Image (cartoon, rainbow, N blue to C red):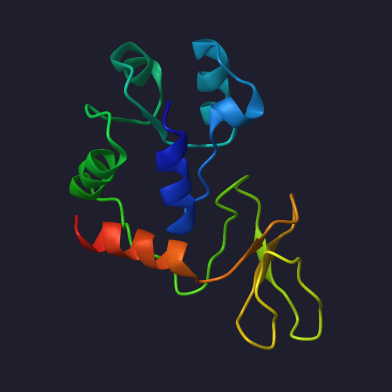
Length: 140
Protein backbone atom coordinates (compact mmCIF):
# COMPACT_ATOMS: atom_id res chain seq x y z
CA UNK A 1 0.00 0.00 0.00
CA UNK A 2 3.04 2.32 0.16
CA UNK A 3 4.73 1.60 -3.16
CA UNK A 4 4.91 5.22 -4.26
CA UNK A 5 6.40 6.18 -0.90
CA UNK A 6 9.04 3.46 -1.32
CA UNK A 7 10.04 5.06 -4.63
CA UNK A 8 10.57 8.44 -2.96
CA UNK A 9 12.56 6.86 -0.13
CA UNK A 10 14.80 5.05 -2.61
CA UNK A 11 15.47 8.31 -4.45
CA UNK A 12 16.54 9.77 -1.08
CA UNK A 13 19.06 6.94 -0.75
CA UNK A 14 17.12 4.66 1.59
CA UNK A 15 17.26 0.89 1.18
CA UNK A 16 13.47 0.69 1.04
CA UNK A 17 12.10 -2.80 0.56
CA UNK A 18 8.49 -3.04 -0.55
CA UNK A 19 6.83 -6.29 0.49
CA UNK A 20 4.38 -6.17 -2.42
CA UNK A 21 7.26 -6.31 -4.92
CA UNK A 22 8.44 -9.49 -3.26
CA UNK A 23 5.00 -11.08 -3.27
CA UNK A 24 4.75 -10.87 0.52
CA UNK A 25 1.26 -10.12 1.79
CA UNK A 26 0.68 -11.91 5.09
CA UNK A 27 1.40 -9.81 8.18
CA UNK A 28 3.55 -12.52 9.77
CA UNK A 29 5.68 -12.69 6.63
CA UNK A 30 6.06 -8.89 6.52
CA UNK A 31 7.15 -8.90 10.16
CA UNK A 32 9.60 -11.72 9.53
CA UNK A 33 11.11 -9.82 6.60
CA UNK A 34 11.50 -6.64 8.68
CA UNK A 35 13.09 -8.63 11.51
CA UNK A 36 15.44 -10.68 9.32
CA UNK A 37 16.64 -7.66 7.35
CA UNK A 38 16.74 -5.30 10.34
CA UNK A 39 14.24 -2.87 8.81
CA UNK A 40 11.95 -0.22 10.20
CA UNK A 41 8.43 -1.21 9.17
CA UNK A 42 6.60 1.77 7.67
CA UNK A 43 2.87 1.09 7.58
CA UNK A 44 -0.61 2.53 7.92
CA UNK A 45 -1.79 -0.61 9.76
CA UNK A 46 -1.93 0.13 13.52
CA UNK A 47 -2.00 -3.51 14.59
CA UNK A 48 0.92 -4.41 12.35
CA UNK A 49 2.96 -1.44 13.59
CA UNK A 50 2.29 -2.48 17.19
CA UNK A 51 3.61 -5.99 16.50
CA UNK A 52 6.83 -4.85 14.79
CA UNK A 53 10.13 -4.50 16.62
CA UNK A 54 10.68 -1.10 14.99
CA UNK A 55 7.92 0.69 13.14
CA UNK A 56 6.75 4.02 11.82
CA UNK A 57 2.98 4.35 11.75
CA UNK A 58 1.57 6.66 9.09
CA UNK A 59 -1.92 8.09 9.29
CA UNK A 60 -2.31 9.66 5.85
CA UNK A 61 -3.03 8.16 2.42
CA UNK A 62 -1.49 10.72 0.07
CA UNK A 63 2.24 10.30 -0.58
CA UNK A 64 3.14 13.97 -0.02
CA UNK A 65 1.45 13.87 3.38
CA UNK A 66 3.22 10.58 4.17
CA UNK A 67 6.55 12.19 3.32
CA UNK A 68 5.71 15.07 5.63
CA UNK A 69 4.88 12.62 8.43
CA UNK A 70 8.24 10.89 7.92
CA UNK A 71 10.13 14.19 7.91
CA UNK A 72 8.42 15.21 11.16
CA UNK A 73 9.52 11.86 12.63
CA UNK A 74 13.16 12.57 11.81
CA UNK A 75 13.63 10.95 8.41
CA UNK A 76 16.12 12.83 6.22
CA UNK A 77 14.24 13.39 2.97
CA UNK A 78 16.78 14.97 0.66
CA UNK A 79 17.74 13.68 -2.74
CA UNK A 80 21.17 12.13 -2.67
CA UNK A 81 23.85 13.93 -4.65
CA UNK A 82 24.41 10.68 -6.49
CA UNK A 83 21.57 8.16 -6.72
CA UNK A 84 22.32 4.94 -4.87
CA UNK A 85 19.14 2.83 -5.15
CA UNK A 86 16.98 1.81 -8.08
CA UNK A 87 13.60 3.51 -7.69
CA UNK A 88 11.97 0.55 -9.48
CA UNK A 89 13.43 -2.49 -7.68
CA UNK A 90 15.64 -1.09 -4.86
CA UNK A 91 18.80 -2.61 -6.32
CA UNK A 92 22.13 -0.81 -6.05
CA UNK A 93 23.04 1.62 -8.82
CA UNK A 94 26.35 1.93 -10.59
CA UNK A 95 27.55 4.76 -12.76
CA UNK A 96 27.64 3.88 -16.45
CA UNK A 97 31.04 4.48 -18.03
CA UNK A 98 31.11 7.33 -20.54
CA UNK A 99 32.12 4.90 -23.30
CA UNK A 100 29.18 2.53 -22.81
CA UNK A 101 26.05 2.75 -24.94
CA UNK A 102 22.69 3.35 -23.27
CA UNK A 103 19.17 2.20 -24.20
CA UNK A 104 17.11 4.40 -26.51
CA UNK A 105 15.14 5.85 -23.57
CA UNK A 106 18.27 7.12 -21.77
CA UNK A 107 20.59 9.97 -22.70
CA UNK A 108 24.04 9.19 -24.05
CA UNK A 109 26.70 9.00 -21.36
CA UNK A 110 28.90 11.65 -22.97
CA UNK A 111 25.97 14.11 -22.63
CA UNK A 112 24.80 13.29 -19.11
CA UNK A 113 25.73 11.12 -16.13
CA UNK A 114 23.76 7.87 -16.24
CA UNK A 115 23.41 5.13 -13.63
CA UNK A 116 22.30 1.50 -14.14
CA UNK A 117 20.66 -0.82 -11.66
CA UNK A 118 22.82 -3.85 -10.96
CA UNK A 119 19.68 -5.96 -10.40
CA UNK A 120 17.14 -5.02 -13.08
CA UNK A 121 19.35 -3.15 -15.59
CA UNK A 122 17.15 -0.03 -15.71
CA UNK A 123 19.01 3.21 -16.46
CA UNK A 124 18.59 6.47 -14.52
CA UNK A 125 19.70 10.06 -14.87
CA UNK A 126 18.83 13.38 -13.27
CA UNK A 127 16.08 14.41 -15.68
CA UNK A 128 12.67 16.01 -15.27
CA UNK A 129 11.46 13.30 -12.85
CA UNK A 130 14.44 14.04 -10.57
CA UNK A 131 13.54 17.74 -10.65
CA UNK A 132 9.86 16.95 -9.92
CA UNK A 133 10.82 14.84 -6.88
CA UNK A 134 13.22 17.55 -5.69
CA UNK A 135 10.38 20.07 -5.94
CA UNK A 136 7.99 17.85 -3.99
CA UNK A 137 10.55 17.27 -1.24
CA UNK A 138 11.42 20.96 -1.17
CA UNK A 139 7.78 21.88 -0.64
CA UNK A 140 7.39 19.71 2.47
